Amino acid sequence: MKFAKYTYLIASIWGFLVLTPLYFMETQNGIDYPPPITHPEYYYGFIGLALVFQFLFFVISRDPLYYRKIMPITFLEKIIFIVPIIILFAQNRTGINMVYGAITDSILLVFFVISYWKTGTKQA
Image (cartoon, rainbow, N blue to C red; front, side, top):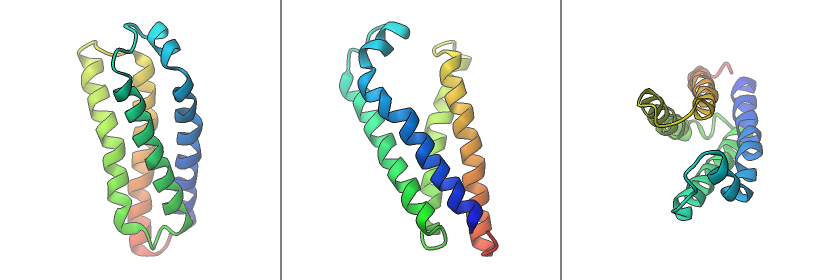
């Protein structure tokens, strides 16, 4: 159970640390990664939804066995970012910095799957 608890807790903390500053970086992101953001509702919507999942990770970390049934949703949260980034990078439509984020999410995805498996055997 400890593996799953720490996996989801670390994922939650990491997510809050990485995502929260983005709320204050809209203009800078437009400068660093042109063109400037023309639809801020998508930008802030993405950040907000991603932060909701960080809360979910925190909740799961409190009692992974109890919340095991919703763990597959966390797999999807990672996959819906990883797959598009791989495709966009292959098409030369996004930069390496986004790939680094997808790599981090891929590692977390593996840990989430292991957590799911271990809580199923009740040995975690």
